[in-house]
Image (cartoon, rainbow, N blue to C red; front, top):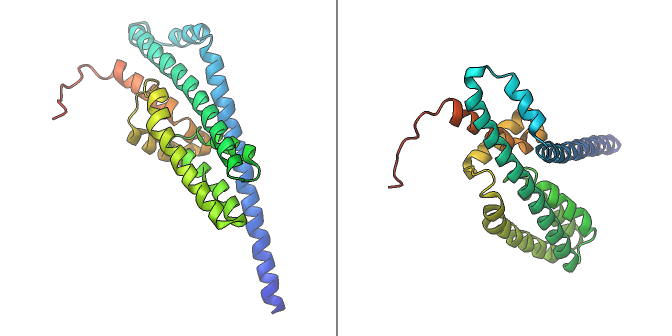
Length: 222
């Protein structure tokens, strides 16, 4: 029994260390992603030096295409950054208010988690609802059910109202492309790569449109 207790204690200590390490890595990744978003918006507020620097490195025969691609990239990234920050503010505030009304402790913390979850397209908001549900489950299973229902409702509003209205005209990317991009870039570059999925896809599409695509095929919806 003593040996079994020692093994259990050792396993619990190792598990706690792993969870702590994962939590610190997650916080660090989210902070880096948020800092990257702020930097993108800051750069886009005064893009002229960046444009001149990039065009100076492009051979003269490709500068017309490069100028058009840069214009598309900067325009779409600026719209994406502003829309993302607005959705983060709305979802974080709504989550904090809703959880406070449901009697969940630390609603501001969970509101912040919900806001940061918006940094990772499609997958982040789903992961962000797990902590408040588990926290409420430890206190009262019925309260956890209410939190889960509230999270479901607010996610539906975000998916079918906020995201199409705010992000629809920003990046104009297919949801499947974004989801595959999150899994691909996240597996290669980690959490920051998952966050940067939309900027990566914006750049790839602009380069493809202006340097490779010559004539868009005319395929009807039917």
